[in-house]
Every structure is written in C-alpha cells, then in structure tokens.
Amino acid sequence: MHGANLGGFQIMDFPEPADPTIAYAETPTSILFVEEADEIRGYDAMRCEAHSASLTAAQSVDFIQGVIEPLDE
Image 1 (cartoon, rainbow, N blue to C red):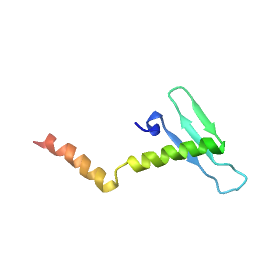
Image 2 (cartoon, one colour; image 1 turned 45 degrees about the horizontal axis):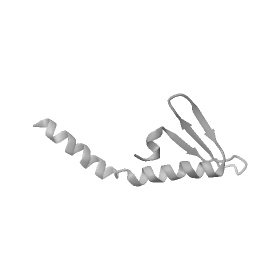
Image 3 (cartoon, helix red, strand yellow; image 1 turned 180 degrees about the horizontal axis):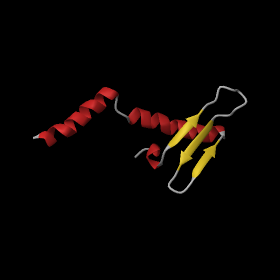
Image 4 (spheres, one colour; image 1 turned 180 degrees about the vertical axis):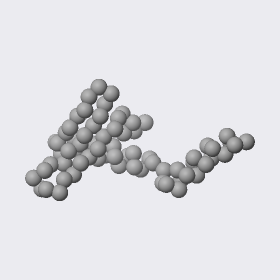
C-alpha cells in the first residue's frame, strides 16, 4: 500500500510568488494545511508514487471490461 491510500490530499500552487505552495490533507477526523517545504516534498512524493502505480486510461478501460465481461455470461 502506498501513502496516498491514507487519505485524500491536494498540493496547491498559486500564481503569485508571495503565495506559498500548500498541501491540503483530509483524514477521517481532521483537515490539515501544511506549508513547510519538506512536508510539501513528502506529499509530492506520495503523488508521484500514486501516479506511477496508476493505470493509463486505456489500461483502465481494459481492466473494467475484463471485470464486466464475466458478469454478462
């Protein structure tokens, strides 16, 4: 299991240089905003890991079709 399974999060960048990058995380009991660069890097690492583990759109369609086909029999 990768870290992104622990709950939803977003990394928000803003166009104004004075506005810091913020990571926003949701847990079952709270919401967390972080601005520290090392914490943002941790969230970005989780995002990269989740992206690397995800299927492409075409692979997702093939997977879903493979699950649905036996149900039609």
